[in-house]
Image (cartoon, rainbow, N blue to C red; front, side):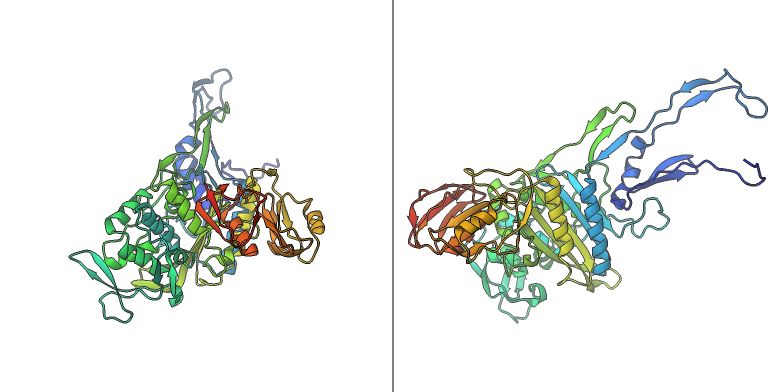
Length: 574
C-alpha cells in the first residue's frame, strides 16, 4: 500500500495437503514446475494420474496498449480452459489415521528401518488403508527419506507368511499328509540331479548342502504337519517340498497365485521380484519365504484366494474418476477377480490351519486380539545385504498377515517392519489396527446361531467373573450384552466359564458357562464354529467328530437329548 521500492508480491500456485503424512509414498505429491509453468505430479499417484488431474489451460486473444493494458472489448476466448478430474480414493480416513499413528510408534519404539501396513476388504480387494514408512510431509518435500513404497515397489524375502501357499499346493494337489507326523528338528539333505529328488539325511551326515532349521534352531519334536504350520516350522515345509510336492507343481502354483508378476492395481507403480527356485536349497527356502523375492502387494493379492474361498481378487486404491465440473462419475473401479488358483475346499482347509496360529504355544499366540477370532500367519525373513554379500545378521523382516472374523473373513490386515528386534517387538500396533478396522467397518467377529437373534450394532464389553455365582446371577450380568450365552448342565451355579473374566468380548460372541449339574443336554449347535465346538469339548470332556469347514449346519444328536462322554456326536460344517 505504501509502494515502497523493492517490496512486492509474486503469485505462486501450490498443491496443499491438509492431512499429511497421509499414505505419502502411495499418493506422492505435486508441485509447481517452473519450466512448464504449472502444477505437475512428481511422485506416486500424483505422477501417474497427472494427465487426468492437471486439466488444460485455455487460450484468449486481445489487444493491448503500449504499457500492456488490455483494451476493453477486444478479448476473445479462443479455447476454453478445462479443469482436471477429481480422483476419489478407496482409503478410509479414520483407518488411515490409525495406521499412520501406529507405524510412527513402530518406527520409534522398535528402532525400525522401515514399516508398512495395508488393510483390505477380502471379498472385493478394496484397500482401506495403505502406509509405508519412513514417510515424509507432502507439503515440505525437500527431503524424502525413501522413494520406495514398501508395499508396491520394494521387493523382499517375506519369511514364513509364504508357508500357507506351500500348504495350499500340497492340499490342492491331493498329496497333503493328513494325520502324519515328521521330526521337526534340523533338515539335513542331499540332492540327486539325475532324478531331481531331495532326500533327508540323518542329522550330522556329510552333505554339500547346508542343513535347514526352524527359527532359533527350535526343536518341536515329532509333530503333525498341521502343528507344523501353527508352530511355523521350516522343516515341515522342507518335508512337504521334498517328499510330497514336486518341483513343477510348486512352480505352477507360485505363478497361479500371481507372484513375480505385476498386480493389476491401476495407476500404482510396481516391482516384480525374482523367482529363484532353480537350486535345491533355493527351492526349499522359497517354500518358507527366503531365496525368492516378492512385493507386499503380490502377497496380499495371493492371500485373497485363501481368505476368499479360492477366488483371487486384485487390490485397488482408486474408487472413481469424477468430472470436477458436473460431478458425474466417468469411471468406477470395483471388484475384479483375477483367478482361482485353488479350490474352495482347499482354501477352507488352509483357513482352518491358520485359525490355530493364535493357539497357546503357537507362533501367533501373542498377537491374538481379545474377543476376535483371527486367521493368521506370522513371518520372520532374513534380509540379503548386497554390500556384504550375505544375509544381514542384525536386521530382519517381521510381519503378520491376518483376516477376521475367522469363520467368514471380511477384512485382512498385513503389518510389518524391518528392525533388529525379531522376537519381542510390540504386538499392540497390530492389535490396535485390527480392532479399529473391525469397529470402523461394523464387523461382528462371531457367527450367530441361526435360532438366535443377530445383533447388527458393534459393541465391546469386558467379560464379567461368573464362576462361583448362581445361574440367575450369570443371566443378570449378561442380559445387557448383545452376546449369546450357552449354559451347559442343569446345575444352579457356575463352575467354569469361557472366555475368562476381564477378556474383551464383542457383539454376537458366544459365551459358555459350565454348571455344577450332573445332567448335560445336547445344545443346538447350528452356526457354531470349530472354536465353539472345541470350547464345548474342553468344558464337558464330550468329544465331537467334525467334517467340513465353516459353521455347523447339521448334527446327529437331537437338541435336548441327554449326553455324556460316551455319546458319539457328529456335526457337519459348511
